[in-house]
Amino acid sequence: MSRTILLLPGDGIGPEIMGEAEKVLRWVNESFKLDLSFQHGLVGGAALDDSDTPLPDETLELATKADAILLGAVGGPKWDGLPMAKRPEKGLLGLRSKLELFANFRPAILYPQLASASSLKPEVVSGLDIMIIRELTGGIYFGQPRGVRQLESGERQGYNTYAYTETEIRRIGRVAFETAQQRGKKLCSVDKANVLEVTVLWREIMNELKLEYPDVELSHMYVDNAAMQLVRAPKQFDVIVTGNMFGDILSDEAAMLTGSIGMLPSASMNSAKQGMYEPCHGSAPDIAGKGIANPLATILSVAMMLRYSLDEGAAAAAIETAVGKVLDQGLRTADIMSEGCTRVSTREMGEAVLAQL
Ligand code: NAI
Ligand code: MG
Image (cartoon, rainbow, N blue to C red; front, side, top):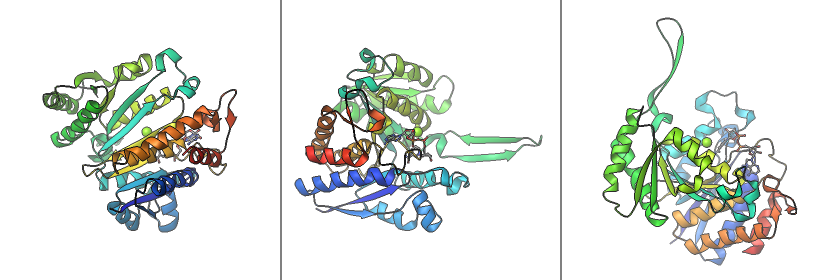
């Protein structure tokens, strides 16, 4: 059965890291006889430059038909002055909402080889392996009405709407419970149920779902406490599930526990297991074009894609093992460089992973 992968390099370092990830993907495709076919499309600033929209119809159509999407990153100072609806980021948000990619998986794993890259003490973070599951297509980032309006008093007011339906909460809840079942069987649901009604309902539904997953231990935590606990004792967590905005913030916080955003992959999936896979970082305009960006987050996103959307666990594991070996060799891009290691470029890092494969 042939499956189609859409590659969307995007902006800034996007094309550089995508180049390396594509080589790895093509290699496993051949070696593991995966029968994947590849397409390329434009999104973000690259699409804006070409056709004045961050998400062209053509890209959306390719994305809808693809089994999985691999995305680099979008955005950059070149497009910063544009109105909200025309910003490169709208391309990404558009893909997430049009494909209903409601479940965002962000693993925060500390590679033992990179322990010194974390700003936390080794005993606090060593062996860290947590999974943050963020609801991605609802909540305050999408709620209506929204805008900036003029009040009768003459002053302007900015406003957004925070809303979740039961259906939205239940479907992300199920994904979280099922993920916990396959991991350490501990799920922490993060909310602000002491202040926000939306999350009172969120908590109620998580408790309801718990009855269907008796083997999973469910706990609840307020988001402000969760932010503290993540830096105090992050290893207390296994799986965290939370809404769009809290998840945005907590997943970036958790990412930093591991020391480098250049190492962290992510997956965003819908009910049909179609997924968009991308590194957690952005387009890094400050280092774009220099050939020094770390391609490993994107390469590890390929592994997530193989496992989550394509059921090719063996190919995924091969990539993850190769990445581990490259780190064992002491090869480091600038962002993860430390004493005694060998500094390599984006391309050299990609080639090193291929060599291990
Ligand atoms: P960023 O993640 O692009 O960069 C933050 C810092 O991390 C920079 O110093 C950058 O050089 C470094 N960095 C990021 N990825 C790296 C890698 N692979 N290797 C080595 N160093 C790396 O975040 P920033 O600066 O806030 O945003 C830059 C642009 O990216 C903005 O236009 C923003 O909107 C966009 N962005 C896009 C995202 C996406 O496409 N998913 C996510 C976050 C930001
Ligand atoms: Mg973020």
